[in-house]
Image (cartoon, rainbow, N blue to C red):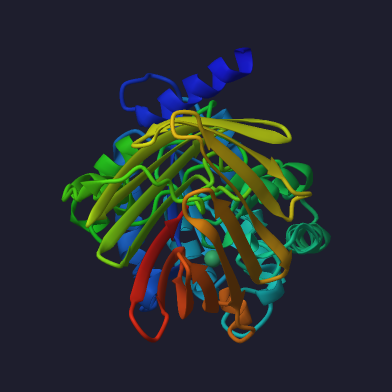
Amino acid sequence: MIKLKKALMAALATLSLGSLSAQAESFVLVYHRIGVSGGLTLGLSPEALQKQVLELKDQGYSFILASQVKSCTGRCVIVTIDDGYEDVYTQAFPALKELGIPATFFVITEKVGTEGFVTWEQLKEMQAAGWEIQSHTASHARLIDLPPAEIRAELQKSKDTLEANLGTPVPCVAYPYGLHDARIRKITAEVYGCGFGTLFGLNSNSTDELAYYRPFSSPLDDMGILPFRAQTGLDHTALFMLLPLADWQLGTPVNTRDSSLNPAPYTLLGDMEYHLDVGWGQRQHTLKYRSHDFSVQADLHRGIQSYNEITASYHLEPITLGVGYGNGGVVLGASANLLDYGEAYGYYMPSTADYGFGAELLPLPYLRLKTSYGSKDGLMGSAEYALPFTEGEGRPFRINLDYDHQKWMVGGSAFLGSFKFKVSSDFRTTAKVSFSALW
Ligand SMILES: [Zn+2]
């Protein structure tokens, strides 16, 4: 009960975004490249970088390192730079050194010393000047695509390499693309103790230490919104939370629950997920949010038919219990971790005697299988395989095979950072497009 109360308090603290409380809070700035045109990775000039940090310094923020996140008193800023590009040494390092501001550099250890990336000598020089070098995994793989042994290898190899070359402890990892799940957080707790994601928010002593918030940089930061972002921890991706609310076109109400939806997600859940599926005259919005062991999920169907459901779940190792309410009445659900290879779940709706069960599995690297059976919607299944080219970019291109409401569908999907786009069709009557955003 005390644990539940703590989780609820943490959830409330997160939702209040800290703006009303007086506790110590840190805002994390995230950069990738400095002084080069970075395209999608948001390259900033060294002058713009100086201007941004000075603006916050003038407002009384103190600058700390990622590993010091727990020792923040008052209002803090943590400057973090990901990946390990050479321009961070040539451009960002001198620019921040001039201002006496240290930064945390999350490097991909397999890239160190390769063309376009920093060398171990440069990292040692930065470290001697007050920077800290932490892990961004060995190869920058999308960890959520991997079975447990491969996740552990990515995390452990990177830490060992950093410690061997730099001779200092490495307590923190920044997850590539900000993507993590309970399996990844569990291994991070064993190997590191501190992990950074990319969800918006401010970090306090009640923040999950395996998923510190790191809001996205905004192109509007230079136009005066940075102080507001530092105060609230918000970024543009917070707008996804409003999308389901903006879609109010209700069709005929139905009480058929989609059996592919796990009512008590935990094992494969990061901090937040938003999915939109469009097809067959229907739009399905699914929003999930997790804080510590507590999560909430909304499932809203719009278009020809409408269905609404909201569930809340609480994780009690090794199972997760969920309860919710939808068009079909009360929903009772539970899920269980399948040895860190995935999760199985089931649900029952007392008022309609509707039931279902399913599982989501990662039996091999880059292969994700899902299957579900519902008393009303029958058997469904899907397989997704990430194609082996573009290894260093976390295998963005995938092929999909779905058995969806009695139709075989073939499709393709692609990740752009932590956003995913998918198109699938049965090549006769229908096509479906999907969008997912993961934090
Ligand atoms: Zn990265």
